[in-house]
Image (cartoon, rainbow over all chains, first blue to last red; front, side):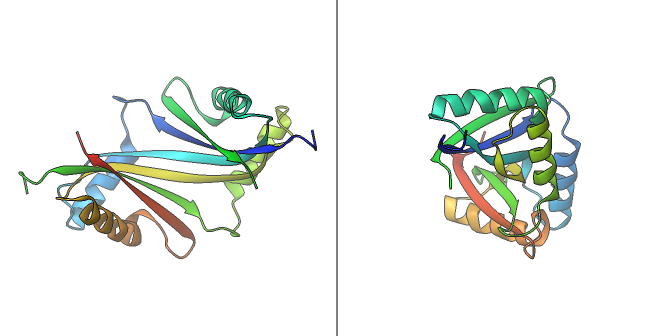
Amino acid sequence: MSDTPTRHVTVTIRPKVGLRDPEGNAIEHALAALGWQGVTNVHVGRTVSFELPAGDDDTARSEAAEMCSRILANPVIEDFQIEVGGRGV
Amino acid sequence: MSDTPTRHVTVTIRPKVGLRDPEGNAIEHALAALGWQGVTNVHVGRTVSFELPAGDDDTARSEAAEMCSRILANPVIEDFQIEVGGRGV
């Protein structure tokens, strides 16, 4: 594995559209209390970025998708999006 | 404010480079235990996306930067990145 190049991957995980987002609602209320009354549709997600040994972008993407399904995300209630950003550091 | 167009904004907040990232470390160990030993440099961040009334992208960006400084991020230990994605829904 040590001579396989690495790819930089960023995964963004968000609650599925239409599901409750209590953290987003809390932020929306807090922003309104600070004077940003017009801010709507607040949604919170998380990102996980990493370096992954992979010969090409497609391999990196499919490995990352498997990571999301198995541990990074909860596919029942969350959607994920994978960006492969070329060779890692 | 009701006739001001809205802009879709996504803010990504990450621990500053070099600071401890215990959540990232925990994910790195969990991935290794599942067989992804080669994954390194795992970092966790969060995203906040919203619709903001703003006439143009620059206004949206500066409003979002103020939100980050005041409530969304902790500028002492976190960096943030703002993307303004055109007119919102």
